[in-house]
Image 1 (cartoon, one colour):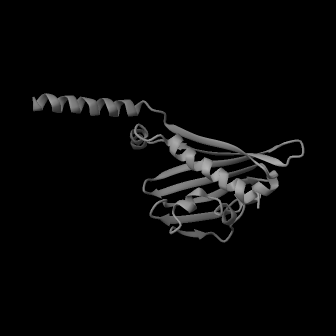
Image 2: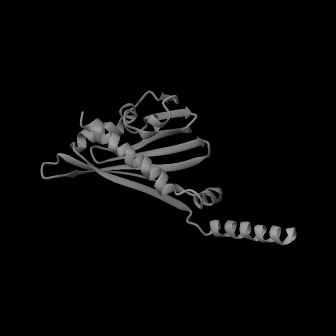
Image 3: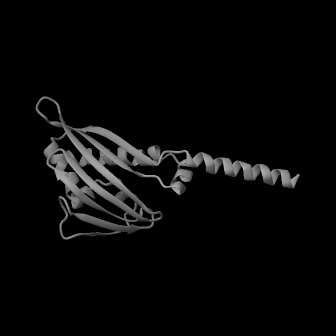
Length: 177
């Protein structure tokens, strides 16, 4: 009886591991929101990392995290590194900034797991006078095999997407000031 249960459990684990291998090798999470501010104002809040961190939802999740800015805090080459109990250890660097429509970033995590992702903020004017901005926050990256197994149990789109929605709400509030 115990041998049968062990074989069934082993088969279930093998099937789970085989199924994980069939999952996509990359992910993309994206959320958008229309903000009542012109693209130029919103762009300034995204492409300057000090201003970015005034609305960044991950900074709010772990107020005790230690962060360090590079000499340049805005535009391509600007970098911010952090270490915290709740948000782990990592860094982000602005790789491109096209005023007032796009900011691209490289996002690297060291702990609690290693990950190397791409983040893009796309800003599109809305309204006849351009007094609104549709902000799209997207993150994409590879999904190694161990992450594929984790994704079977955790919905990355829902977890990260919820953080993006919260961050876009904070960005809207900051842009309204």
